[in-house]
Amino acid sequence: MRIKSNWFKNGRKRTPQEIAGALAFVIWRIGDNALKNTRNAKFEIAIGTQYFSFLGEFLIFLIQVADRIAYRQLSAEDRMAFTSALANRVAETLAENQSRLIGNSIEKHKQYFIDMLNQRAGEYADFKYNNNGPDFAFTRYLGYCMREVMDEKDAAWVIDQMMGIEAPEAVTMVEKTMHDLFETEPRQPRSRKTVSGD
Image 1 (cartoon, one colour):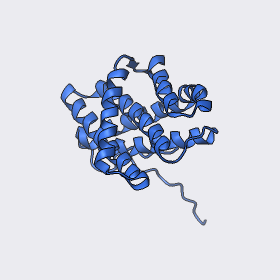
Image 2 (tube, helix red, strand yellow):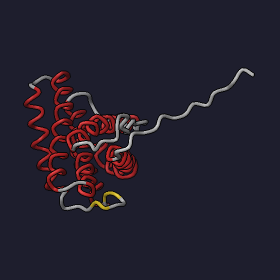
Image 3 (cartoon, rainbow, N blue to C red):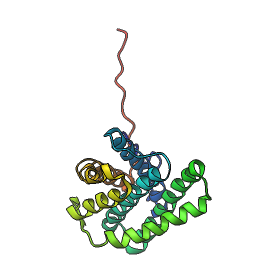
Image 4 (cartoon, rainbow, N blue to C red):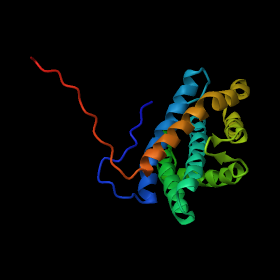
């Protein structure tokens, strides 16, 4: 999965809210990709409530990852602004999709996600995240959350799918994206190799 994560305009410092807005789009794509990968791995995830439950849990995991990375980069005040903006933007995107596909108001879906995020944030707080990424317990907890989403026949295997494949790939993408978004220098355009007619 290719992700564009560089600023193309002048090298001014971006606000936490601007970084969060750009990252929210990327996180949505990463979560959607993890869902597709898991379905392609023959896990049954039905369109509807189960589909959005899976996606919601994975997005919460990604927001926790982004918040821990922000801890390394930002002041406490800026980190709070960043994580709040990120959570709200991701929640809005998820809620808009849920409302369109399964009904109920956007506000209701968004509030449910935010409530779940706040609950999970307290639970993920017990786990460590350092320069090498999340510890074993951090990613294992994602697997346990996903086990509750899956049907009985898939529940026992989804932890391995999360820990061995989806979580490591997703963390790598979030780390790279945030590294790029915190850069103040715009990316230089790639030079094209031309072939002369001589």
